[in-house]
Length: 289
Image 1 (cartoon, rainbow, N blue to C red):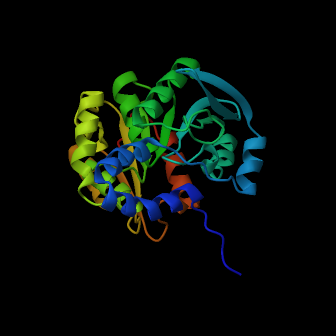
Image 2 (image 1 turned 135 degrees about the vertical axis):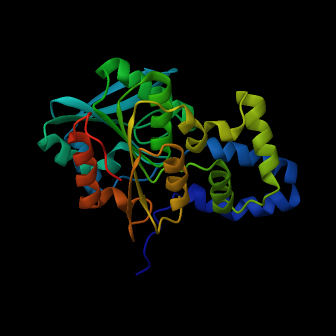
Image 3 (image 1 turned 120 degrees about the vertical axis):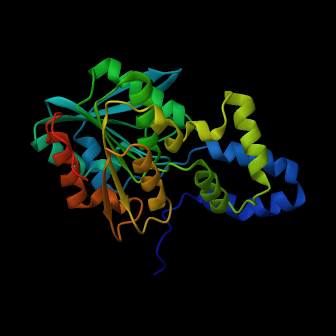
């Protein structure tokens, strides 16, 4: 029996059509490239994630006219988990019972265009601004844990609004050029799309795309205990992202794994225990490399 693809059909279709459109109507493809970059697709929740969501206290907050789904588990001091692009809160299902049992209130959310939240488009700074909104609701977090883009968004929120003194980034991209290249390859676009994309970002948001990257904004990070967890076999985010961040923020604690890839790393017990130990460590304790 053929195994069913977990990739949303819209992404499979886009990867098939984009090279054709670019070859025939390149000007249209360049605009479509930008549209796709900010568009989201939702994955169906597997039964274990549905079960974890059913155990949560659920509520909604308003972000720029969109309903954002927020989840809470347990009681105690708040710890926030931030999913990545095309992810959802339930991806942290292995973390949640461990942290609840340790006496913490676990909070997570589905970003705009993700999970049960409104929208069909999103971007990095929407993630970051929702994190900052939740800090106003819950107070300063004991720690924020961000996966992939969620880690980059959390770093922005730390720098801009001091949402926590402890941040764990798991498999988070730090090199802007690699982010665009990885996306381009996924949809079958050529390198000719990149100049138009970079020009669009600069014209629309007033900054170079690189200025939003973790590798750039880490220079503004102060007084935050940072832990990085990356897998050496991650095909989406290379270990060089972790190395760049550590080179610019030397006091960072770096943990590497092997064979877990980009998402299975969220299910590994040793990873979960490393994050919990980092949280429990005294703020005054020096984090060993």
